[in-house]
Amino acid sequence: MLQTLAQKLLQRHTSDEITQDGQIVQCKVSMVLANDITGPLAIKSFYSMGATKVFDRTKIALVMDHFTPQKDIASANQVLISRKFAAEQQLTHYYEGGDAGVEHTLLPEQGLVGPLDLVVGADSHTCTYGGLGAFATGMGSTDVAAAMALGETWLKVPSTIRVEYQGEADRDLRAKDLILLLIGRIGVDGALYQALEFAGPVIDALEVEGRLTMANMAIEAGAKAGLFPVDAKTRAYCAEHGNPNAQADLRADPGCHYAQTVKIDVSGLEPQVSCPHLPANVRAVSELKDLPIQQVVIGSCTNGRISDLRDAAQILRGRKVSRGVRCIILPSTPTVWKQALKEGLLEIFMDAGCIVGPCTCGPCLGGHMGILGDGERAVATTNRNFKGRMGSLDSEVYLASPLVAAASAICGHIAGPKSL
Image 1: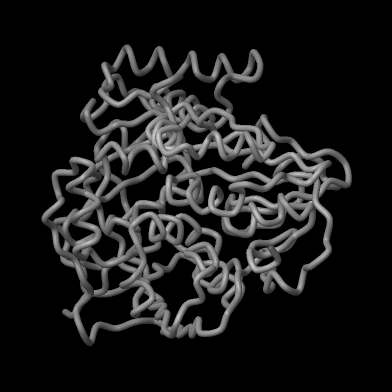
Image 2: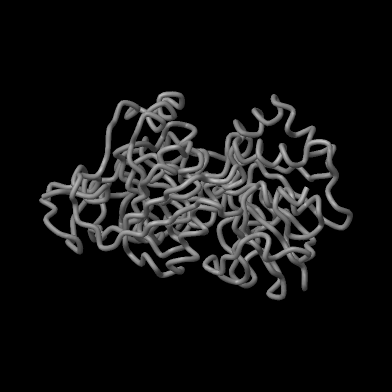
């Protein structure tokens, strides 16, 4: 049987022969993860089902990133539950405080996830790791608890939508724009329980951090996973970060069956913006000119990596954030933070009037460090803009690349780099 990326990856982790989409297979997992919000729920379920010991203490990751640094007593107690469990189970990969960062940047950076892996996490954006050629998907905390205890889970083999990006990309077009283009075209349920397989010359040219951004937002189209083939760029990234599968190779079989093929020509396209209150409400940035804003957030598991901060610094260097705009920069891991410091990016941000914060999810989920008030409008490099996502139910969030976010911070209204 000629196989898609999804079929090949699942076949590596199951003893069942995969013969068709929709088949239920029992799979062994490579890594199980949770955070300070979902972890305590999984831990409670773990004990409730009678489990006493995790299947492999080296294959569980708990990352305290959503409400940390802890903003109140409740969030501190969430971390306390996770910390006690990690100590009791002697987990190798427990991250808190100065060692922690946004989980979906941290784990690839630490070499803990990579090509050919099967990763399940109690967070919907676990699909990020598909950017490295892993089958990675989010699950509820109860399913994750079972995976922590048993080291395996059941999955339905998803059908696959192949997405081909072609044409000549504008110098200001980024991975965030590519995934917004797709979500705008197929909708938030356009790939429901399907795998998105990304291909084409534009994808071949895309660096790994951009691929992680695109895989991260596969869930915003309803996808079970967002998958990229493993190529020389993947192998170089994994070798640099100490992943044991750095020499892996993975590509779909020519002639395999796809449920659908979507072709997107990026030639002549400008940066894209997702408007409230749905990621699929996508428009070109020039259509939104003169829309005033009060906040900009540059960070998150979608766009808080060093390449994202370099893009933002390119725009902010020698300029000032518009009066009345809060521009919040959140490097996604301590490694990213230190690299930005080393390159002088943090000084550029602060000279421009930005607020540089810790490595936290923070405002992305309306947690803290950037909550919107009534009637406020924000441009964010995050992944969701549902009503009330970043604070008040009367606020608005517009999703964009770091280039657009930084340009908007300077202009005081939604704007692309060419506006400068």
